[in-house]
Length: 373
Image (tube, rainbow, N blue to C red; front, side, top):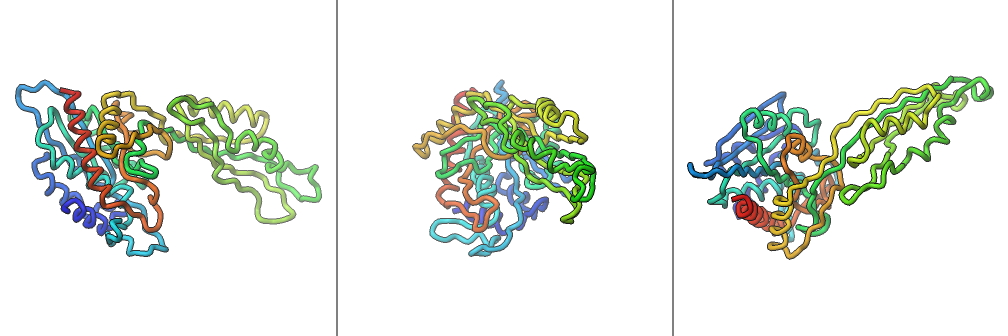
């Protein structure tokens, strides 16, 4: 099968962030009737391929974009197969990036190759930097598309969203992410004279129950409660007879729209009132939800008709490049393969799922076309 042959080719390309490894040239050959916009910024390569199917009399403004990243994380050790081999065993294809997310990319490339009629524009946006900082990736390309009046109306990011079976989960939004660093200051001293010391470990001990795994809101119908998760606490000079002069705590909040950086700051300020501390908060991404019934219903219908599974609508999990589409006003959702082996050893996917996902994307395109005439 041509799709699987191309997926094996992609897996063999060790496109660890931000390396592109010549993959785009092969994609341009497959979609040789699509126009191309390319970027190469600080070693990050982005590509946008698009085709306008409309005739001169059409007034449709429908533009559906499929998006993803061709970069992968390092393979690590402990694999039972060569991680960049693309070997197929027992109808499973193995390799770093097959789930996250080269399999999904192959599926939508060949879905678009099979489309002959569409009342609008179909496009693909790919980057080689999503697993890294992402500074010069999808967001930069979207900014150029905005300047060229080529922003899509709808976008599908083919991240691996399913938990057990292909078709069981669609991501219709994502929580935001706030990273925090708090430094609490005390007075260093000898442990034999605690009255002369101010131990920041003692100061924070009574406060921690109001921080660690603290739910900041009750969530809503689309989002689970926002929660503070402590990721690192350190203090002291590794001496048993010296109290520390300061304590550093790092944490993250995956926030719903009910919590902002400002409300989080106010909450923490109330806990540490009167103490000597510094607090730094950085919002790396904002929560979003897709409200487009056309996009959601078209995707559900495509999944059900090809898998007989009714998908769950979810906003769980980490961040993805879907957030950038949302920032540019594009209705976006995520749907792709099963994600049970992402970033893990022996990452693999069912061969039949790659083909089935292609068929789902073809149905989705046709559903959008029927609704948006």
